[in-house]
Length: 110
Image (cartoon, rainbow, N blue to C red; front, side):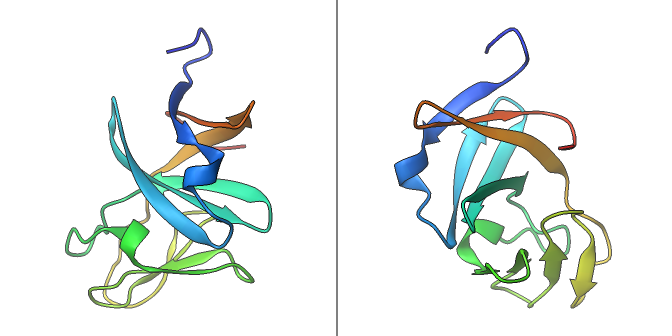
């Protein structure tokens, strides 16, 4: 872990544009989506039924993820549920690319 709280979890090449991948971190399993040359990091477990959001579908036009199990839709900018049975928002994480590596830190982006 670096002095600013970021941990290296994988390479940018592991997260192709328009897709998401899940990584194990010290604070749990976190999904990273690569959309429109921007990274988003969010809890991988859907708050409705615990399914992996990295296995869901990613909409790169709207920055939304849809859970594969029950079709809950979440805004990746805010973590808020937009549709489906989920009512609780996703935890979001700070994410950055550094020399081809994806690095994550706890705490909301911004």
